Length: 89
Image 1: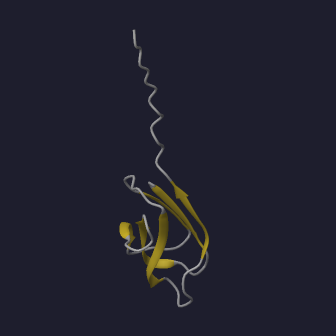
Image 2 (image 1 turned 180 degrees about the horizontal axis):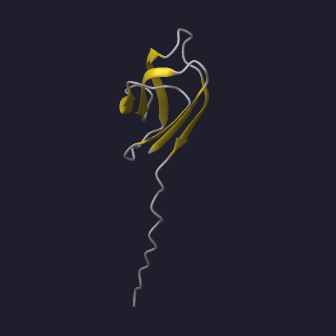
Image 3 (image 1 turned 90 degrees about the horizontal axis):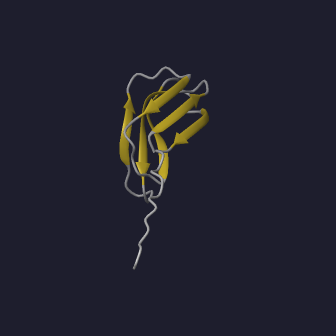
């Protein structure tokens, strides 16, 4: 994955992390925000293998928790398969 788009509701995250995991047990932070203001956050980062993605809120923008309308996850385009052939004479 290489891009996450967060569409915040009124209760946004002032500080949060985007974290990824292959097995949902150990998490790697691929992006950190420390001064968010809500709205639409379009986040890009180097391609990272992941099966699970989460937004880990560390500071609320309002006292009401965190609320997202939508969280979009985009992957890295895979290279097309290489066609190989073998001729035996």
